[in-house]
Length: 167
Image (cartoon, rainbow, N blue to C red):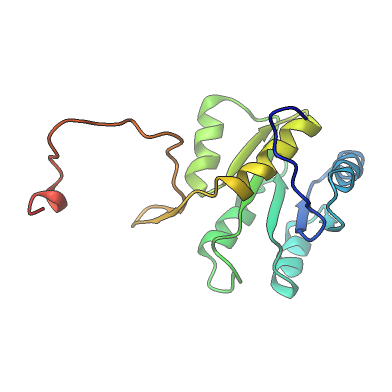
């Protein structure tokens, strides 16, 4: 795949949540072709919750759309008192790709967003990003999740933040 690193993904475990059986089957096949052997999939957010509790995965892929609120699962993983790992990487797939929707998903604490229809190379790239470029997590009053900034702006000016004034 050109400039994409070649990772051995056979030991990764994924929970995949998708409401449509034909899409779930296709993506499961793609994950298998990428070398992932431990795939638990479901069309139910409740079943996904139980799967994650029973055996926490290395990452989660969930659908999100008008009739399937995968962001509820994201909220539970990030904020639930019974979540086994708040830091689990979460990839959201959606045809709900307007800028404000991508921002909303990001603000819920997703790690990556993939627009549907899903291209296998895009899925592989995003999984590689989870491995090679894991973003630090941020916690504040209104947000917990991966740092939402993708790049450093290289600000060279004077710091005016109150918490940095004494430095």
